[in-house]
Amino acid sequence: MKVAFRADASLQMGTGHIMRCLTLADALAARGADCQFICREHPGNLIGHIRSKGYLVHTLSVHNEPLAEGLPSGDLPSLAHSHWLGATQEQDAEICAAVLAPLQPDWLIVDHYALDARWERALKPHYRRLMAIDDLADRPHACDLLLDQIFGRDAEDYRALVANSCQLFCGSQYALLRPEFAALRSYSLKRRAKPQFKQLLITMGGVDKDNATGQVLEALRSCPPPTDCQITVVLGTTAPWLAEVEQLAQDMRWPTQVKVGVSDMAQLMADSDLAIGAAGATSWERCCLGLPTIMLVLADNQRNVAQGLERAGAVQVLQRPQAIPDSLPRLLNSLCSSPALQAEMSEAAARITDGHGVTTVIQHLGY
Image (cartoon, rainbow, N blue to C red; front, side, top):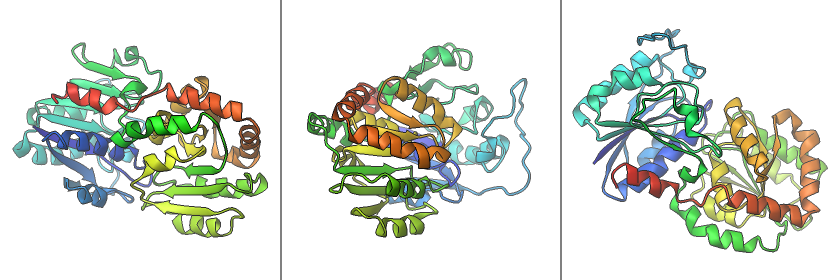
């Protein structure tokens, strides 16, 4: 089986789209699939990382001239995230066609907020079936299968956006997590039977373009964790504020280490007692391991994730980075002083997903 992925990472959009596609690609490749990627060379891309995992990557250049959507639009409006593409959908489809025509993949998997049914239809001659990964439900798709791993997402949210024949997999039970999260789930949940607060994990996504990590570290100075607490900060290799964060970490009063491009995130989360993290793709990883979390909304497209998990009791939310200095100390004090609250959040988080979503999804892709 041949599978082609169309997804991007950048300083603007972060790394989550590529990372969940890589999780799916790894599962497919382990079962014999030939997986290839098509990625644009945005600043902050992960093309090198994808290649380091052994996958062929076809690269697309970024167009710097003013863009005007070129594909037939009918009554379709312009997309809210069209500026994330670095080209028009027509330009993107044209160059992707040159890659896909000789490949003729059994599945084309697209994970991009700036692509919709127009792009998908334009490439129809060059693939057998198409899977769209989405979590916005804000545009139509011409796909055979659609995955939205948002907690509480209802398939009805997409009924008017896809054909009746499209298979819909909606909800956090389908979250695309690497196998080590499910493998460590039992260990992680067991150690939370007696909540403590000795390991704090700070993870604001692979890029953290606005340096929320630095703001969190500054706020911790006015609301110190217990004296025996250790802090671990995780950032991606393309994080623009890495040097500043490393300097801040050296000046903290508690042992604070900064890890870059980690490969053992599941173990780090399982060994942590509390996380302060963004409402991005790592939300489902933390839930699988029952890790209580103070969650920051760093972008509008993260708001639904945060609200759903807050309603479920799995997280406590800061709706905007500007609230960090005043609200983070209050939330942290509340959790530090209440092991019962930590336990309740852990149990609520663990109910969100069990980490086996990838297995379910690849079965429907033919494996």
